[in-house]
Length: 313
Image 1 (cartoon, rainbow, N blue to C red):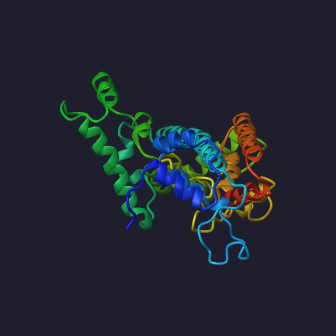
Image 2 (cartoon, one colour):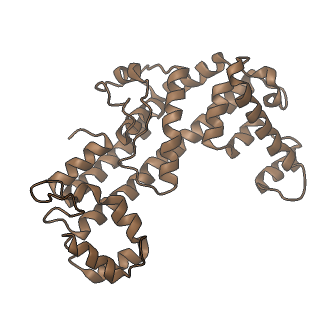
Image 3 (cartoon, helix red, strand yellow):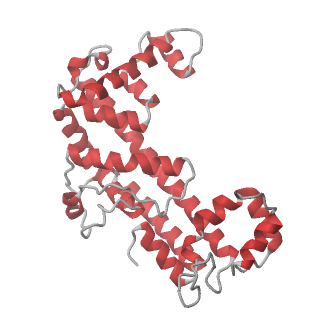
């Protein structure tokens, strides 16, 4: 079992493993703020000595020349990366909610049409997901007709003023996972129209199929959770292979650049669902962030990190 260690003891452990600590007072302040596990256990991997000649027993030793500030630089890079990626994913989430509510309400303009099972796909494979979505929307409505235990006061305020809660209001209170399921269970014509709305936003006369938008949503959901919960992002990789080979060609990407499920895959696939001007700003900020990391680190761990993230050297 792991026993408690003071900050001074933690620094002594790191020094015994070959990590140089140039300013111990500053390092103690970092550990008191960010904690040992989040910083060291989360970001040590690129800096460990893996040369069998230098480390024949495979101990947890750091490469010669590695400093505490190197690990801190990667930690800070990943924090900024999370914020940058999360910002783009929130834009995508807002956009899918807006497009879905608009197109569904355009097709079915009747009040509470989203509670009618007949307005969804009749495919039996979606039976349970459809019922979950309509139940969730109905629960949101019912809970805000009451005056007690109101979860979202803004919904209550809208209901009191208008006496109903339309879909374009309710979607803002659904999670990305719920929206993903909603998109799955609507009819194919609506799915195709919404996918093409994204392609039109992205410009360049591209096309996006409903199945490809399904895949993009399946990528966005786990990465959004990683970013929102402040987990290690740069090296995160989806377990399942992704079928977006046609989109790779359309986006002028080499084979595997999108389908590997890396952080780079996510960043590249966002081009298909983002307005061109916004995506350009996003990637410019990303490149600046990567350059700052390159300047802060020795070459070998930097290359290791870029490969782990899915970027080419």
